[in-house]
Amino acid sequence: MIVGGRKPDAPLWNGRALRTSVNDFRSNNGGRRRPLAVIGVVMVLAIAGGVAVWTTAGRSVGQGGHSSGGDVAVEDPPIDNGKLALSDSEAKYLQDAEHLGGFVLGDLTLPQMGAAISDGDDERLASFLSTDFVGEVFPSESGTAALLEVADVRTWRTPRDKTREVDSREFVTQVMAWRSEFTRLDSASMKVMLMRPESHGKFDGPWVGTLKLRLTGAHSDGQIVEREVRFRCRLKFLTEDQPDRSGWLAGCVAYEARLSQAREHLLEEMQAETGIDVSSLHDNWKRTDKTNLPFLTGGTYLVDYDRDGRVDILVTDLKGLTLYNGRDGGRFVNVTLAAGLPPLSPPGEPPPLGAVFADFDNDGFPDLVLGSRLYHNVAGTRFDLLAFGRDTSLKLPRDASQFSVADYDRDGNIDLYVVGLSEGSPEGQPWIGQARGSYHQLWKNKGGWQFDEVAEASGTRGRGGPTFAATWLDANGDGWPDLMTSCETGKNDYLINQKDGTFREGQLPDIYGGFSMGITAGDIDNDGRSDVYVANMYSKAGERIVDNLRQGVYPEDVDAQMRDFVSGNELYRSLGEGKFERIGQSTGVADVGWAYGPGFVDLDNDGWLDLYAPVGFQSVTPERPDG
Image (cartoon, rainbow, N blue to C red):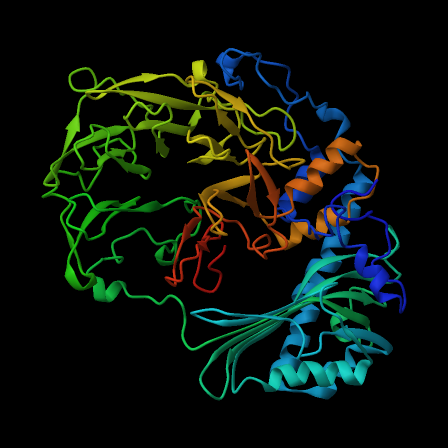
């Protein structure tokens, strides 16, 4: 069985039959390559201890199950955790493979190659190559060009673009030619992506994997330039003393490349010119005590709350919140107190980090849900807190922080969806198997600030896994809002509106379909249909670890899910009628790190949606901004 694009023990390198080995990296799905990714060392420990944290049995909808208008809840099959734990020898194998591939090669050896390229040292670069080295590179005049408003981009990809074979001398010459394009070189790096023994278990033999060369800087004409080339590679050996050895790189075959050139950066810092004060925000970099640093510190929400045609900004933070009123010339003024919002939380209450603006009373001015509180926008002049019982029937849990709004029943009132609420979650959650401990609420807006909670009746209460975000979209083109969620563990929700107040489960082209922390929808190809980007957790270290996992260690269905849930971020292109295809790999948005809070926006005003996807885990220092 081929899972995740190739057999784990299939040869990644076949002497000079290079184009044959190239195909081993492609999946059966239209030739789409699907690299594997997860959380590095955490992944080793999790696999060693078993994929599921606990075993589950079926549960009713009332306990966080997933139904569709009274149908029987859809449950993921039970997982026998005891059978999933790796043996000590299998776990040690993964640890040793990652030590050699990730640490010895990635952290100690490849930086020497990057330094040789940066210094323009042909002889030093050539010393890493074996005497029988064989490689392939893309001819510079080939590829596909895209002339954009903000940049000129040329891409190469096999098998669309042909490569030419080179020996060691020609390979060094080509790399140094790429280096010489830069009058100012800001960085030159060679990074390891995949790396495993060519024959499983034989550490003392050849190794195969993938490398990424990246050069950034500027041309003599001042243009900003970035060149990236990805290679399939073969190492003659990989040992503890690799940094001190030479002649170990036996081959590099380019399979994908990109050259980007621009006159200026698309985005630049400008907060100093706007009046927005960032100095008062929580900043992990400024803390001397680096223990117990927070992962989530706040959010930014854009709205024109006073309908003057200028964007206003609400900033939530662990140290408090600020509402900025937009003025002419891109300036902002702090109006938090004047607008009736509390800069600080009451004593004993955590600061609200989640918010959503929506016109719940149909007066034309967007109201505000801030944490568990509801505020009425009084004609754009101030926000009045509405009290439960006296003013409204909306009573949100104290931990409410992830919201999404839509008029799901098309009665003219904006409804509120709240995801990721806790109901006594156990200490751990299974990556594969039935998750539990979280639920969602759907508040039907009846008008006059009166709401009914209808998640269970509508089939939108969720599968039980921790959920970071939700988005509404018309997935099947029938004019009714459908729903998708992003779940950290367990399967993401995809719910089709039945036009009667209930939802049924839709199907996405996933094997796993989770490991997600953000989601957004937009029409990326201007075909009139909503496409979806799901921000997942990606790690090159985890990619290597799963790639080293021996075929047959897990049952086929579990193995398939593992290789799918580490495939990185995903972009779903709508095919119409509620169907989607996965294009994250082919569009280059998959391996971009741990992504949160993505958004589609036309950044360059060319009429096509661009994608902004913040990534990172826990920012600790400026030198290690991704933690």
